[in-house]
Amino acid sequence: MGIDPTARGDLAARAARHRALGDPIRLAVVDALVAGDLTPGELGDVVGLPANHLAFHLRTLEAAELVAVRRSEGDGRRRYVTLRPAAAVLVGRAAGADRAAAPAPVRPPRRPVFVCTRNAARSQLAAALWTATTGRPAASAGTAPADAVDPRAVRVAADRGLDLGVVRPRHVDDLAVRPDLVVSVCDRVREAPLPFAAPTLHWSVPDPAGRPVTAYRAAHDELADRVARLAAATGLGVAA
Image 1 (cartoon, rainbow, N blue to C red):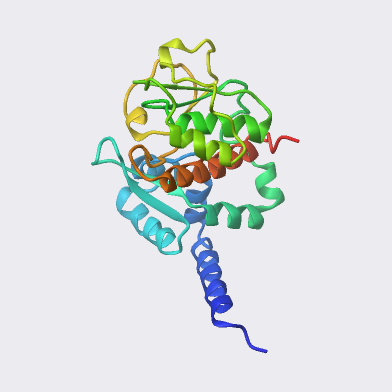
Image 2 (image 1 turned 135 degrees about the horizontal axis):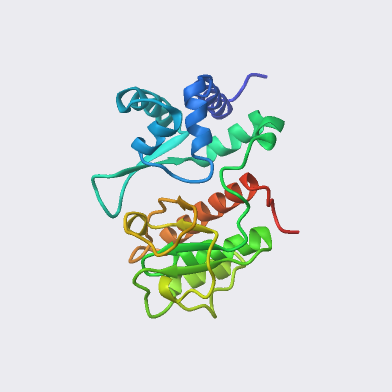
């Protein structure tokens, strides 16, 4: 019996991804994006390539659906390069013990803080997901906090087994802890100064505010993937 057309298409897509990763520079690009997003300029500095050379590799990785390049929701002139879930799964399987032995992109955080503008959806979801995934506490805050957590975020969280019913938005200046890792989940926050002396990561997650509940589900699912990836990269794994 031959391979059915759907399976053949899946195999072709997987083969294209493997071909795209068969270049040391492109593999280095993917490695650099495991924990968080970077601008093309930042990414070029990491892999040691000028912008015109890096652009070719990014186009190849985009065509293979391994990375996405998103325009900032803050400064529209800025772009962020994001690792797509297919790349994380594929590289994780291919790297095996080599990836496990590689140095973590950041130290395992004891007091991570997730920050967005309103602290009403994305940062609240990220903090709850971090605790659910690692069994460790996390905080969230905003630079212009809303009066309450977005009801659609509460609803989506409840559907996924997370409780946001008792949390309230708060300002970054009101945090009671000194974070050892700050993760911005909002482009506007990433592009504004924050009052923290701590390592930072950026996750360019589209803002679901004012959109249908499907946008909140998409934000949750993307954050869940990113939290799991960061937990694995820092050796924290998944909570029992």
